[in-house]
Image 1: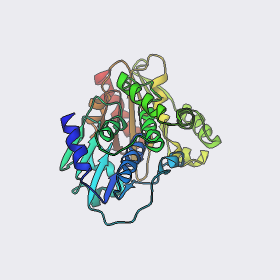
Image 2 (image 1 turned 90 degrees about the vertical axis):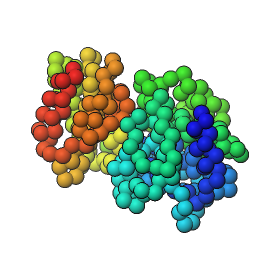
Image 3 (image 1 turned 30 degrees about the horizontal axis):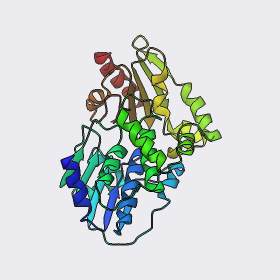
Length: 314
């Protein structure tokens, strides 16, 4: 806590702050960033969130309560960004000038003047919640509570994943008491789907394969499938949990085609199988039960590489 208090004290001296999120921004990186931005603006400071790529429309509510400010950047903070490559289009501009890095990935390799990494936290939002509690003058208003709850719920699969802890629930309760519209957030994040998203899921389920005596499950999301279903990147999030749901599966892998022969791999595991160690073989990382990496090549090449490595573990 002393180290986190030092981060809080440093933040209170900073003004004109850019807050960075990771590429393909999800609820945790966005919720953490907008909560921190809102807190700094509460203190009369200038701050703005810098995203890599356009966030999904369903996250637009996180910006409510944030004032648009124009200023010359003086400080940079990253939240939920485990490696500089995950800054995406912002990597070259920011990778060497990060003042504070806040993250919950044990594999974090960001170069920053000050870092606070807590791999026991279920989400970066948990850390940001505790951080804001150490910053004099910051009030847990409805907007900040909404942002924190969004980060908590999305990174824990609505509190179903194994990274969920008693602390996670306690923080969620405090955000609910502060006005976070938890029912609306959970419905938007986990239940409501567009007709196009439902069509995509139908196509995705048809790609499901079981390997290694049913211990490994694959799904594939191709660019053609996205085009056929009429969806964009903002509606792909959440598919990675599908293969892990199959009875008997210890490792579920989602292979998502990007441009130029690049495949984004999302790995979800059961029963303590280490997804982070598995993905590190391919230059990725993350958490024990949820990790990712990127592989270049043909779909057949990618599948074979993933199966061969999974066989060593399973």
